[in-house]
Length: 279
Image (cartoon, rainbow, N blue to C red):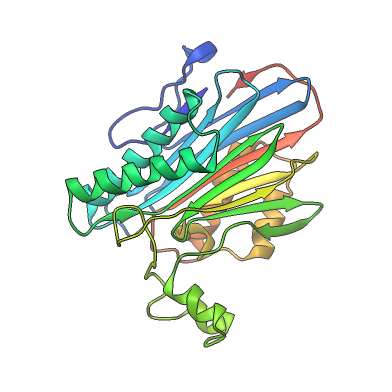
């Protein structure tokens, strides 16, 4: 099962879902095996201010149907440039995952370096963030560059799994500003690391066990910059389909004044058995 966003193209599911089509900006599916049920969804919205959507999203079950990849990338550098960077990143990660080429930190770093070089050769002064999560029986593996984030909801507690590569985060780490000051800092959108931008590209990796009822959420700053942790907990805890939950998160971000594209990818793991479905 694969779905992803590209300008002017529909996301088309593959493998056993050959007849399934979703809108360009969304998709969701559930797979079951002996270890339980893993449901995934990915959605994006250009928002109410931007004329185009430079975010790209991806969600894909692997070829063995025993795990999934989620990706969110937030492009920058103008409409065409930012979209190229983010869509290339998501496309290449989905392809590599399906081919079993994202097994180690080294293989992921190697692909990120290739993407960084390709973006720099295509355009000057553009780039993209990238946060990806591989979720399977080995646990949750996160790789991150930039300020798109990964969160884990477990037992009603929300944990941020990534650390922003941003100027404001550096200032927070050095205790030069407070969290309240960071929220309105005039340079809060300045990144210290991004694919296609800067000299050295190294992803940061995070690992966590996968437990029953875990919810993993990836999002761009167009969402996490406008929705509080408490609100994220409340919405992710709802007993609703993941597609509805994703819509609620994006809708709330836009309603609360997000001026950016807003994107989210979510995976939920339960021990309930069910048929493989798409909706």
